[in-house]
Image (cartoon, rainbow, N blue to C red):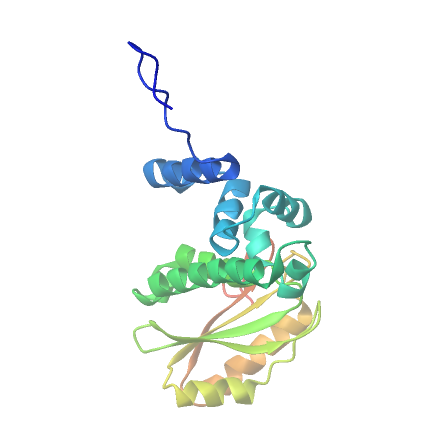
Length: 237
């Protein structure tokens, strides 16, 4: 509709409802950086890429209510995410894609340097992978002669407080990938990274088995919730 004589024409209408909200969040992210976006907004942005016709704010709020934080939401098991009404397979896949991307990015950074020289980076990487797991997982980091990461491989998955580890299998895999050193890692779902007697005994068994082939066990790191323990630093290795 044209404006009245002598007056400017009315402004063009902006995008309706949640579409304008999305555009403003995108602009803020790109101009001010990720710290300018709150957890629920970041969840909204991830979800509206997968659910373009939905208002994703209620879903983001539901995820935060269920899991407590952005990090917990993307790390939650797929079955628990599916239980959030309205999320669907596309939403679950979007969240797990973000988790996978974060893990790949940190792993790529870890591979660029000497693992033992970047201890904080290593702990960040291990925390990202394991701190929010509900059962115990054991990983082995295989290192070359310069202590660079060759591979990070899952050795086993267990219960809430135990995962069997087979020293023979750890050493066999080290020989296959030509590793000269190892770092054992596992999580404590309780959140308390204090090593148990079983942890200490298993570490000694792996160390002895690896030493037969000239392979060094550098450390055994236990990841808790926001905390970690090093058996070497504790004088237990």
